[in-house]
Each structure stands twice: as structure tokens, then as C-alpha cells.
Image (cartoon, rainbow, N blue to C red):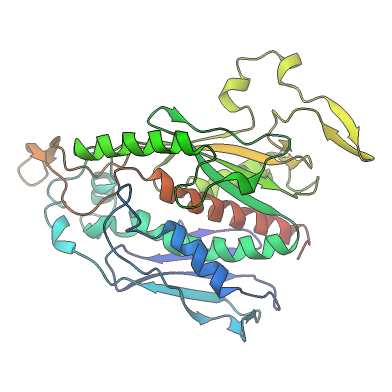
Amino acid sequence: MSSTYGEKLKLSIFGQSHGPAIGMTLDGIPAGLPVDFEALNAFMARRAPGQGSFATSRKEADQPEFLSGLVDSFTCGAPLSAIIRNTNTRSGDYSNLKDCPRPGHADLPAQIKYKGFQDVAGGGHFSGRLTAPLCIAGGLCKQWLGKKGIHIGAHISSVAGITDKLFDPVSPDLAAVQDGFPVIDLSAGKKMLAEIEKAKADSDSVGGTIECAITGLPAGLGEPMFGGLESKLAQIIYGVPAVKGLAFGSGFAGSELRGSENNDPYTITDNKITTITNNAGGILGGITTGMPLIFKVAIKPTPSISRLQQSVSLDRMEQQELSVQGRHDPCIVPRAVPVIEAATAIAIFDICLLDGKF
């Protein structure tokens, strides 16, 4: 099923943007794992809408309501299921989209695939709203990985051509990311916010990139070829709406280097084999090297913009201009940062389960 992810861990995401509720089920979770609800709510708040001028004005509490799988704040071995009730929908803003699909959205291909029966309100099951239950699952996995000394952090690495300071690839400081607007360099963050405001004033949007780092991973996790860690991460990260690119370590820039420049020389540090550089991004042959796992994700500009765009009328089969109504982020990137952390945590937790780490 396309809305299910995982091998040992099974995650299912369900619901639509303007339906009564959205939710997730996690199967394969060992019994006895603690849940810190305060930490989970704080993590969910990072993704929640209505946080400032860079985010949609839609107000949703995004408060998880657990239906099964917990007893006295510990997992009990049963499937873990939770929902978030949708309380602030305006479906009328989307009433014309069955006839006039939005450029850059899934409206037209979904109309063709589902023969006109898809839910267009808020994007239905294609909506970024579905990343909220993903963050429930990922927020929990992130907690449990932390108990094993595995930590995940991400920040905005660029918006509209404005770049942030990057993590040290050999020794990333995850705590350097600022609260609120998740950047390392506050001056770069202010410039990004200015570009977002410019796009918003023009009834337009901007995209950017996110850098994610994982520390504490032991060497030897993952499998070669199709079971590689890059493959596992790519599958779930590309399930996040608006993700259009993924690069590990030196990524595309590494393709412009010589082997002597891109290879990571080995050394001994504290009686442990490490590398002097980390162009591999912590993965070789699909298997962790023991160095920090680092990758970048490209996020496209929000396709829902109120600026006039050219579309078509499906009923009349003629060109038609469209101005998208509703409440939309002029830049998705800030709220996507915890989503990328969540997706990463789910993939890493599944890999750890397969390797018997839990």
C-alpha cells in the first residue's frame, strides 16, 4: 500500500486534509518503551500551522489523541494508533479545483487516476497536512532513538538563495540550531524571512533546502543494494509532499571532485577507526560507517499561490486562469524541518529494529 512504510516497523498514514481526522498506526513497536507526551507535543508544535508570517494562518492544535498501543505511558506491544482531529477547515476555498486543477499540485494526475472521485479539499490525501501524523510517529521514534544515544537534528540550509551555515560534517553540533526559525546563523535567518515576506507580498512563494544530521549511529547498520540506508531514507523522505531532491554527504558537488578529493581518509581517534573528512555522509555501500549521517533535502516552492496562473477547465477543455484561494505557506521549508527529522527517525528506528538494537 502506498500509504504504508517500513519492514520490521509498519507505519500507516490515513485521513484527508479536510476530513474529520488524520492519523497514523505504528505496528511492530516493542513493548515497554516510554512515551514523553510533553516532549512529543513540543515536537508537534514545531510543525503546526499558524506560527508566523512564513506559515499558513490555518489554526490547528495538532494534539495527538491515542487510541491504542499505550498503557500507563508505555508501549504495550499492540499496534500504536493516534489521530488528530481537524477543527479549522474551509473546504469552500477548493470548490472549483475539480474543474480547474492547480499548477504544481497533484490535482490533475489524481483526477485522472481516481476518475474524479478524489477529495480536492485542501489537497485531500496529497496534502502536507498528512505530515502531522507522520510527526507523531517520528516524534516517538526520535525519543526512543535518543535513549540509545542516536540523535537527529535538522535546519534550514537555504531559502530563496540565502544560505545558512552548515553542520560540521565530522562533528555536527545539533544544539546550534535556533528555536523558532530553525537556522544556525541568525543573520542568515533574518535575510531568509525578508525573502519570504517579499514573495508573500507578490502573492507568490519560495522554496529552499534542509540539512539533516544523525549522530550516534554505530557502524554496520543497513544492507547493500536495495536494502541500503540511502534507499530506506529516500523512500520515506520522498513521501513528504514538496520534496524534490535528496543528496547524501558531498552529494552533487562530490561528482565534480577527483577521487583523491572526495574519498575520506581513515585515521585512529581514541582507539577507534574514523575518517578525517565525511564526504560519504556516513554511508558506504548502503551501510553506516560510524561517522555522522548527513544529507540535504530540496523543498519546492509552495504551489498554492494567489497570483494568477494559467490552468485549464476540464469540463470545457479550454484554457482558464486560476488564483488559488485558501490559507497557504509562502514558504514550506521552516515547517518541513521537523517533518524531515520525523521521517528520518522512522527509517532509522526500522533499521535498528531489523538489526536487533531494540
